[in-house]
Length: 231
Image (cartoon, rainbow, N blue to C red; front, side, top):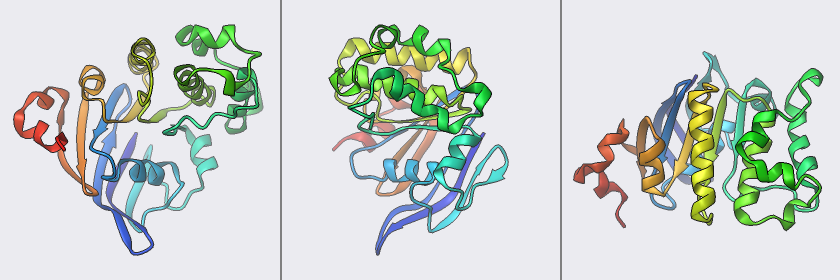
């Protein structure tokens, strides 16, 4: 579904990514772990088109994305749930979900039932403003908005950040459903090790803009792997 090959990314003279290569397959959760500031979000920004890489290639379903703008990537099936959620605080929950319509054809401009099956609280709060929701509810809203676009690849940037444990469990259940029942490719960036261990099929670890480990989630229990995650 997604192949990232040897990408480098710069912010001016600073190099944020140094030859990063990863892949994400349908029906699989690919987790990228790493401490703050190692380049995880920069990698996601390159994938969704917010900051094109300086070199290297990103292909989606066999098509090289090049400098394809973010809105075209969204229409092709790449949905992004950014760190910090970035919902519209003055729009209602219903209106926030409907902003996902921009990426789909007119015939598909409806809110899929699975959004409310996965996150029933959103159905109860359709008329409430997004800014009035708790942080966990806003995270559910951000994921629901991404699902409105009918994605093939769901990209999640630290969805557990600042979220209460009960909602983390709800998000975990939703990710399992989207992988197992819907067959989505899911690319998950995380710092929460247990969350990644429970959900991931494949794990990458980043450090200083490079991939320093790739392997199955079971490898996370190896001391040599865990050493990459200690401060």
